[in-house]
Length: 153
Image (tube, rainbow, N blue to C red; front, side):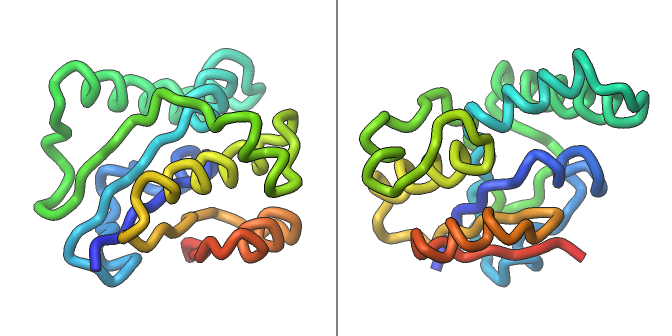
């Protein structure tokens, strides 16, 4: 079954470059779509512009550049066969926050709402949230919304 993965922003900042990770192996699937929701782009831009840590600033800037090049060219040469990248430009509707008791002002809630919105459109794919940490609140909200989570080692 094809899998759709959403990457928590910290994955971009604290792991190998996202285009160098074998996502098919991580989620045990031959077909993977990486979805980048608007909240992730906003967080990367914020880190690029205002992180006090030079390394994080550089990683965020490099990631934004790679995503921009993908958007312009429609391809990302380093992604292996069977892996697609989708940059979602739509924020979740307010109803998705209300119906699932989420708060627009909480970034973790924004990614959960983005996953819920995406799931409503793609009902036949398994969606997985990939995170670099297992924050109790994020995991609890994901679990409550029937979203699988994987913590990268």
